[in-house]
Length: 176
Image (cartoon, rainbow, N blue to C red):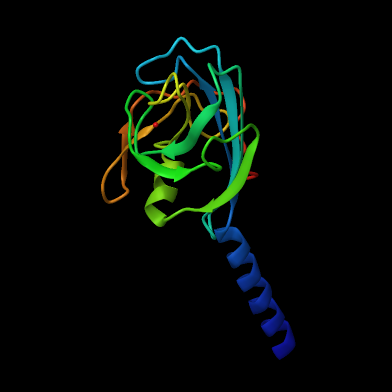
């Protein structure tokens, strides 16, 4: 009887620990149209990432092409909605990165909240566009530029823009 109770308690604890951690997928489509202010760049790019909510580790791959010249830098910026700019949160790759750029970052608690409320964006800089040539807001697949205002305490307020109604729900867990 005692063994059954101990086994049940152990299984419940393991399930609870597993239930609290999740891996969420994030993505960004980069273009000159998304820059603030817009650029006429023919460049495009994608940012794909998975985020572990327990360790706060973000594993990413950034690809870009057709820029006006070599990239001089690539960063994650925030907190900012899609129509605003913000400071650098983390560099992506080395100085003058070449595509693809892959790596991992451990986010602070506040940065994790910015990610989860869609208040981070990826920016690739060039000599011709030192403030940024292409940019993309980091969102979960299935959402359309849904950003929330991020306060200093990390709380999220009402959406800045609305989410288009989805016909199927986006997967909740997988992953300037």
